[in-house]
Structure formats: C-alpha cells, structure tokens
Image (tube, rainbow, N blue to C red):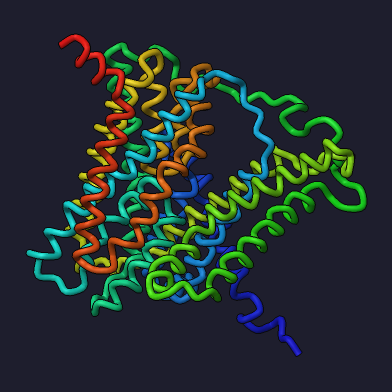
Length: 465
C-alpha cells in the first residue's frame, strides 16, 4: 500500500514547489527593484539564479535534485513547442515571404557562426591546455545555449557527456551547456539594454520606452464557435489533453526509432539525436494534429473549435518559464571549476560575434526598421523568442513594424535551414577528425548563407564594377 506520508510520494512535487516559490519570490523582487526591472532579465532566470544562490546551503543542497531539474527542463521544452505548434496562427500581414525566409536564414547562419566561434576556441584549448576533463567539441554547445536555449543546451550537453565518456574524458556537458544558456540570457538582456540606451542618447531611437499597456478584446481569448469554458469537460482540460496527446505520440515515435536497427552510425549518432529533438517532433506532430482538426471541421466531422490560442499561449509560456528556472537550477558549479577559462571565452566571444553579425544582417535586410529587427533577433539568438519580444517591445510597444511577425514566422524556414547543421552536432563529438570536418562544413555553410543574405549588396557592387 502506498504511503502518502513518505517523501517518495512527494519527491517530484517538491521540485515543482521549489520552482514555483522561486518564481513568486523573483517576481516580487523584480517588481520592487527598479534596476533589476530595467535590466529586462526574465523573471524565470532571476528565479533560477535564486535557487543557484541557495543551493550551496546544506538543507537546500539535498532538497534541489539536479536530475529532476534536468528532466523538467527536457520535457518543458518539448511540451512548450507542442503547445505553440497546435495554435491556429492569425498574424497580420506586415511582412513578405522573402523577408521571412531571409530572417530564417539569419537565424540559421547565426547558429553556424556561433558553432564556428565555439570550435575555434575549444579545439586549440583541448590541444594546448593541460586539462584532461575538457572536451574538444564543447564549443558546439554555444549555438545550443545561445541560439536554442536551456532545453537544447541540456539535450546536447547530455549527449556530449556520453561521447566524451566513450573517449575517456570526464566532461560535464549538461552543466557546460546550461551555463552558456544562463549566461546568454544575462548578456543578451544587459547588452540589449545598454545598446538601446546608447542609441537613445544619440537620438537614433525616438520612441518612448515602456509606454505601453496591453489591451485585449474577446477575440484574443477565443474564436468563433469554440467549446464552452466549462461544460462536461473544462476548456483548459481539453487544451492540456491535446498537448499531452501529441507528446505521447512523440514518445512513441522516438521509442520506436530506438528499437530499430540503424547500424553503428545510427546507434551512436542518430538515436541520441532523435531523443534530443523532442521539440522538433513535437512541432511536427502538433502541426499534423492541428491540420487534422481543421480538416475535420471543414468537412463537418467536427462542429466546434477545440483549439484555443490564448490557453495554448499560457501553457507554452508556463512550460518555458519552468524550463528556464529548472535549467538554471540544474547547473552544478563544482563541475565547472576546472573549465572556467573555456566557458568564459566561449560566452564572451560568442556574445560579441552574435552582436556584430546580427547587427550587420539587420542593417542590410531591414533598412526601415533595422533597430527593431536587431533587438528582436539579438534577444532571441542569445535567449529565447520571448526575450526577443521583450527587447522589441521597449522600442516598438505596439508591434507596428514587421519585426515581430518576422520573428514569429521565421521558425519554419529556420528549422529547414538549420536542420542539416543540427545533424552535424552529432558528428563533431565522435572524434577530433570528425570535429575538424564539422568545422570545415560549417564554414562552407556560413559562406553560402552569407552570400544569400547579402546577395543584393554583393551583386550591386559587382554590377557597378
């Protein structure tokens, strides 16, 4: 008989209690500390940092379970993407298809240049730095931490730990990747705010910061012919059930691939990557279910609208908040003591290169709204899309420029452009030879993407000459 008085019956809930309490405390602090509020740091990151600060204390050290926090991070990422994929997106047409494709190319090329910078730091350090616990391919975690966020940083960090262990290296990839992700949030927000104030002082930004109050209409909460809020089943229950249904299909799909015989390459590379791509499969199967539901309504097999965008937004937002808190709380600094130098170099140079490249791309692609485009993209490519929206709202509070739409719609072309690069993430850590080949391919891909992004400028110069 189960004993509800035992800690084992409360173990997982205790981890959620910790996250929730930290979020509430962080929100209280952020609301009452003007400096922290002006920094635009996400409340979820502040909550994660609070847990990190109290973790060394004896009682909390035993209470906060690293493994549980990593599992929460992993599943929160997948569930959040499922919720986003299920939404029936209704976006005003403020942009063109080509601009969306170009924005996706900027996203993918930034991942690539981040990976190149990371490898150019970690490969020489591995060869010439006397540290046997450092992994040569760890630089590839930079685009996962900066470009993808804590969930993917954790997924690939765990995979890289396995690759390193096979080669006799005691590398703690999850801590390295999560530290990069947390640093990305901090640097992205602080650099964004500092640069924003510099531009305002120079008179290049004239819009009033923070002069915006969100306004909602009934159409923002529900669309026509939706199921009632509470009937025989609550509307919130339906949305949660749809998300979990899709995620269960994701699990069955990944588990089915795991049981297949894919040879040596498939076992060592593809199968770990499949489990790490839970967010991608969630997006695909979520979109498929949405198509099925919408098709069923068109042929009158289903009369009511079961998808509620507002509720799905809240589910996704909650999942991503939990992901950031848990991902930050899962960091164990004791595993990073011996590799602080590469971590410092990767994070610092990664932020500098990301700033420079995104700034150059936005100046070229968005001449009429280059700053709005820059802050939205820079925030996303050092944190998450939410961070990009937070920075954008400071100078474009009503989203009057196409920057917000570009950010939302670029997801599909970014996945298409970036998928081959993500596959390389599983090739690089297999050996030093594979890592150098990966670096070479990334350089070629970056050149090709740059030619596409800056083609008008390059062709214009060629025609003049």
